[in-house]
Length: 292
Image 1 (tube, rainbow, N blue to C red):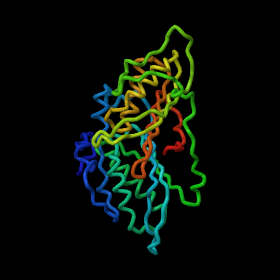
Image 2 (image 1 turned 135 degrees about the vertical axis):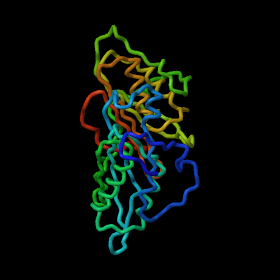
Image 3 (image 1 turned 120 degrees about the vertical axis):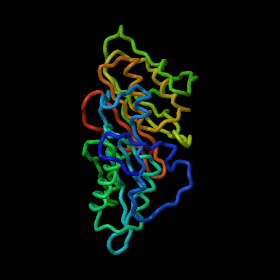
Image 4 (image 1 turned 180 degrees about the horizontal axis):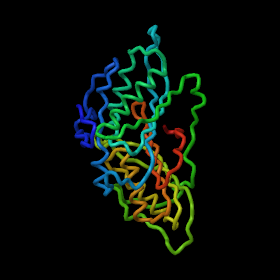
């Protein structure tokens, strides 16, 4: 589907994508398989206005199933790390991303750099489609001889899961969030492995961990954990889940600084890890957790 290079909204909807459908797996390079979905729809539902994002950040993707042929027909492979700015007007529907990567399998490329450039060009076009901005994305390929350098590390911070709480909400319940403005401000990092949401279209479970860093009045930790658990039966893509957490915590807990970083377990060889922050800072290293 073509679009003019202006601010025309992307008309794709999740229901039009390949999610939940039987798919023919193309093994020859085909960039038309990429299916962009506009971020604006779900952001508007959360009260986030286009062009006035309340956060900075990016989506960190990892592809573990990337392979192609060299000029002599011998299979090559790599792990790919992608950095997608949160300002892109679109996300890429994950199944279409998998189908696109699969289309490299029987396609010959001169070398890994040619593969990286092809990925960067195709993904940037789909992610920025409908925008008047000519920006890019980050793509890094990790060769097999460097796989041993790919670390596994849990998110740093105080573990909220230690708390013995009663959980009764399984749809996002921001009313569970609170902070104590009578106390001195704190700076702390809190984590949980109990994040779970469901795919917006198929309802399949998406498991994740979340790290919340903030400065401001102390956040009630039991309420925060109950809030994280409340996503358990919620149907939404990974990126807006993280943005919903950010906006809810910002509104109900009144921090002066806030970062929300969610790392979701992979499905079909892809993991998606949204990072949203209230102030400009370096992105975290794309380091997978044990479950990823």
